Image (cartoon, rainbow, N blue to C red):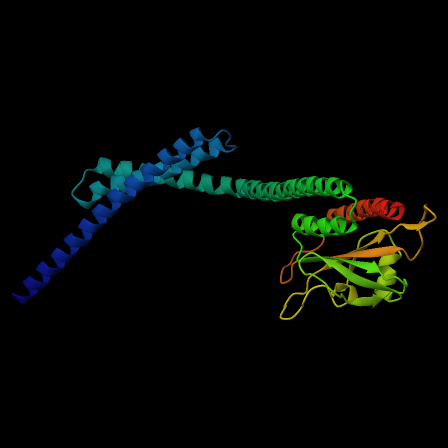
Length: 313
């Protein structure tokens, strides 16, 4: 009696396993048959697909795999020899198609990897083009603001207004943390901090004109980068900064009048200093330095006109 109970238990277990296998084969076959339909749908939606024949071959492989699982449903019960023959033919066909698909993929995978490489290359070029277009738009906007600034400083003959307008508008256009003018002293032996963008300087500091950094700025008409620790860069507090700001400087020619005859002397230069925001990764760009040079020359012209007016009055 105990033996019969064990046999009955094993029989129920086998029936349960067969039931699960039957259900599993059904859903596997359903999934296999749905995959080719999805592939065909997306291929038709695609404007260009270079491997349509490979897709048909792969779809046939998927369909045959699904067919083997579907036919396998009839093998769980008593079946005829016809079912065995159909099952054998289907498996043999599936084996042939699967091997052919595997051999075909050997030749296609390198091409697919090449397509991916070209796609990444084109994406990289597109990103570079976007950055260049953004830079061009930024340059165009900056140039437009600088032209407006030049028009504004050329429309006044007051020295203080010219200098203050230049600092404020340059600071707004270039996003500066600070901007200042160092003007030559009466003796010409030093430069005095007279105008800043954000701070009022009642009695500004001075720097000797024979300092190396001052001579470096005065020796060229180009805007150059100066160390943030140089005396010229002491136009804004630097406490508590983790990343020092980049500082640019450019000379501004000043007109010297002698009996109403303008003469440009070697020591008749002011220096304009521009400081980028601190604690940022921003650096001076070439086109920004060129714009600074243009503004410096226009400020020189405006100051010379104001000097002539003051001298004549």
